[in-house]
Amino acid sequence: MKISIVITTYNLEKIIEESVLSFINQSLPREEYELIVVDDGSTDTTPSMLDNLSKTHNFTVIHQENSGVSHARNVGASHAAHEVILFSQGDICVDYNALKIHYNFHDAHPPKEYALVGYITWHHNLVITPFMRWLENGGPQFDFNRLTSGQKADYLAFYTPHVSLKRSLFIESGGFDESFVIHQGMTAYEDTELAWRLHKLGMKLFYDENAIAYHYHAKTLESVTKRRFYEGQMSKRLYDLHTTFSFAGSLTNKSQGISSNSLFSDKQKTFISSLIINTFTIKPLEFIAKYAQTRFSMPLLFKLVCRYYYNKGMQP
Image (cartoon, rainbow, N blue to C red):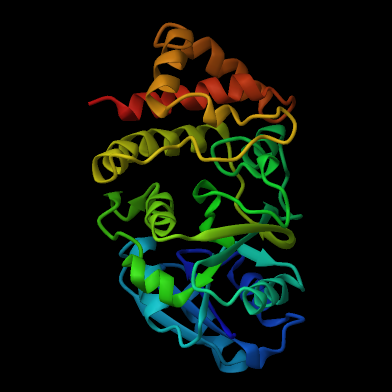
């Protein structure tokens, strides 16, 4: 059961070569997978770097006008020739055995409903702050601390920087919703929206912590709160499209016994957090959080500040 790797990229000249080469230099034999890279209208040296690399390493490069990541992924998937599609992006580098783990999983689970998400952590060349550590373990980026390797995950863990699924199920779902755009190609929750449709089609998503990907994208409180505002905006569209959708998920937290996400609905969490943090309290709390992000781990404070901007985005 061969794999088609679909990587999307935009203006990532600092890391794109390392990313591509990490997918080329794998323990999985090259004849078992193909590599497709979609350049979404980059204006730096990314296009020429990809063209030169493709001549040496024999992979497909597709250049298109900047249209957003959803369109780029759909275009890449439309060129996929194999039974399994693995989605990733140009700021991701994968471990030497990552593709073999995905390959072995799908070889052992041929039904179309089976999918696999791997572990994503920070690239070793980044200065990793306490805030970034929180983002990948319970923060609004990833929530790996509630997942158990080798066990089933829920649709909320469908993390598109490192997830594989059967091409037939992806086609049946209709692919990524290309209208899930805020402005100028900026998207949010387009992967969650697809995951919900896949879930309704019976997707069985599993997690393997040994399939490791490294994310070369430093995050700050400022950049994340800006995105949280956009996510708040798009959550309204998500609920409008899918009235039964829930951010509660279905998994328990290994350390706490029950996931905090499963205790309250998104609307309840918005109401509760609004009682704690508002326009009068946000400034001093945000000031402390900005100071702490590179020095101390303050999960509750980080969560409250990020939640404030999400709530703000949800407002009419």
